[in-house]
Amino acid sequence: PAPPPGLAWPRIGRESVPLRCSLGHAPVLQVLGTFILWLGWYGFNAGSRLTLSSGDDSAVVGRIVANTTIAASTSGLTALLATLAFSKGRGYDVATMCNGILSGLVSVTAGCATLPLWGALIVGAIGGLVNRGFGQLVLRLKVDDPLEASSVHGACGAWGVIGAAIFSIDSATQVAYPERNGGSGGLVSGHGDLLAAAVVQVLCIICWTGSFSTALFLTLKKFNVLRRPDSYGAAAMDEDLDATIHEGMPYIDPSAAASRASSTATTADPVDASKA
Image 1 (cartoon, helix red, strand yellow):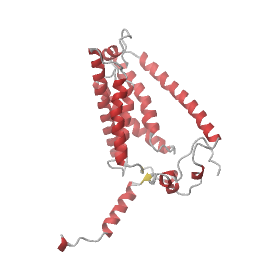
Image 2 (cartoon, one colour):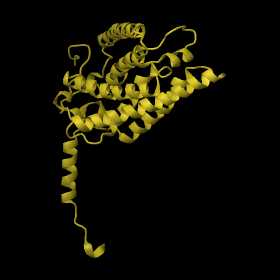
Image 3 (spheres, helix red, strand yellow):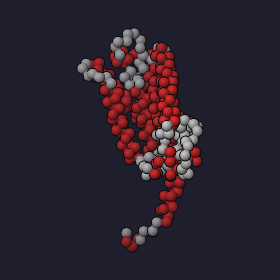
Image 4 (cartoon, one colour):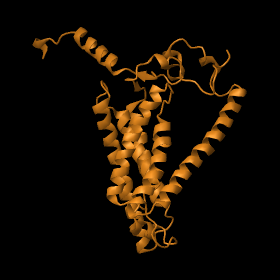
């Protein structure tokens, strides 16, 4: 069958799934993957210093590790609390917590060497809110993002660039980048040039990635290799790739799951007290 119109399209049945539904991923594997990424992020952020041969290097690496830890933890908790407060029926959601942690890691990367500890906390907390807010916006716009990648890496990545330009301080920036003389912090240090550059940078990244991604996806669609052709006309969501290939449901309705659990509990054989 021919692919639907447009550059991309949601998974089959996604439009009929309530917004309250969780993404159908294996929680154990998701938590494991989150902690693997979190551990690797220390090598990514701190390792970007490339040297550890002086007192300044030690100070910078120590700040990077502390800021990375604070932002990830704060963002995860903020995303979880925001979901509890504003999303009815979600409860304590492991997927939200994991994506919140990743949002904090993404948000703090730009300024991990130049933020004060309190700045990393603020950047992480706002990153958690950006993750939840942008994620809900994407859902309401009927854009299907199974991994919330646009929220975690796109929105929180943009926020991280802006946050670094706002909360970076002179003392940390001059130690991390000694080649920059004079005041080199962000808005809290009285310098607006870094914020202006950050805004331009975010816009340039959006234009660059948007144009090249569009060209790539149009080319893939032209050759009919953007998506499996036999999934175009699937009639139900359990006929899509999640179930047919990966043996898992793509969405989980928490209210329906609770109803099934309650029904199972009430229909189970009663315990024989004489055998207890």
